[in-house]
Length: 156
Image 1 (cartoon, rainbow, N blue to C red):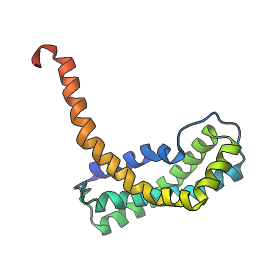
Image 2 (image 1 turned 45 degrees about the vertical axis):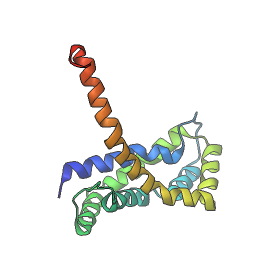
Image 3 (image 1 turned 90 degrees about the horizontal axis):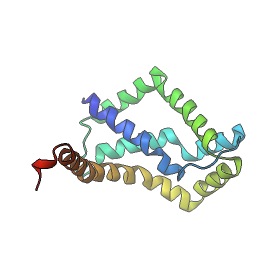
C-alpha cells in the first residue's frame, strides 16, 4: 500500500468536487432541506468512492498500487475514524455557505434529470483523466518554468 499516493488522490478528488457544483455563487441562507436534497442528489460519498475506483482502474497508468481489498480496508478505516461524517458535515456547510435556496433547487433539479445523472456518472472518469493530464502536462511545465524563473541565466 502506498499511503502518500492514496492521500494525494483523495485530496485531488475532494479539490475537484467544486467542478460538480459548477462554481460558487452569492449565497443566501438556504433551508436545511435544500442542502440535504443537494447532498443526496450529488451523492458525494459515492462520487468519492467512484473516483478512487476509477483511479485504480485507469488504463493510462495512474495507479495507487492498492488492491481491491486495501481499498475496502481504507473505506472501513475512514468510516471508523469518523472522517466520512466530518466530510459530510463540512460539505453541507460549504453548500449552505455558497449557494442560495433557488440555486440549490436548480442544481438538484438538473442533477436529478437524465442529463444530470449522466454527467454525474461520467464525473469520476473525467476527474481521474483530468488529474492524469495535469500530472503529465502542467506539473512538468510548471517545474520547468519555475526553474527558469529562479535561474534566469541557465536557459536558452
